[in-house]
Length: 338
Figure 1 (cartoon, rainbow, N blue to C red):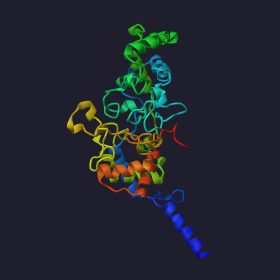
Figure 2: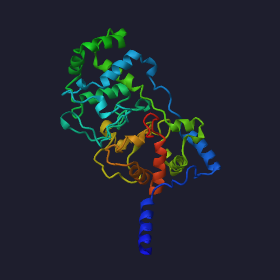
Figure 3: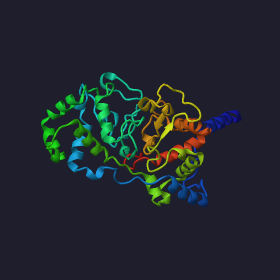
């Protein structure tokens, strides 16, 4: 009997190893002094998400309505099977991604990069992992003509197909009255971008940054503290906790897969090898898998890998668990699991 109890104790200890201490409800993991300093430090590194994205001041309800219809229209793909929403799912408060390592395009073709979320995307300083598009409108043009995504042959065929839909003629006229309702590739992209600029999320971390100290649990505050003190703020700062600079993937220790050379493919500059846009961390808990190639299945794994690759720090499973707890507070309130 004693031997059995001993084995049971070992099993329990092994299962609990590496997980954050849950403790009783309301257990203090940080002192009042630590929490006060953390609140002050957080306001240095981060800020709440704005209510509107840059450029939205020129968007009209008619442009947004047209953009939403186009965003969900599979006729923008060669075989009428793929829409923007296919890879950047928004149905039922979706995460703005398809949660696949890489998305599947027309004919089952796949690319090499993970589909980033469209939520809050317009706040970023550039679009795509390699920054090849300067804004949402330019980004919207890419997948439609990409042979492994929506695979339309050229802009002319896209305009011809959309222009042939009776409903669109009236919608384009209302959305672009100064352009006499012209159905053009530019206007298609502008409308989609106008809709995407409405995809602003707000979460409990916003509330915390605005002074609501109890918006985060003790475990989440502990994770935030570790996030800052470990050095993650070297790259993940601002309103999005990322999305505002490029950084080398494998800054100190190389990433396992060195086939994708990142921004180098755009600029051909040696200094841009393995440089990628730093991903934003808002809604990161619901946009798995992770990294530009989608090869990290869990946040805990991603945190531990990034600690070693980028900071030369060995983050323990327990520390990673706390940081992941904090990431949960970055999920949009309408998408947060209750």
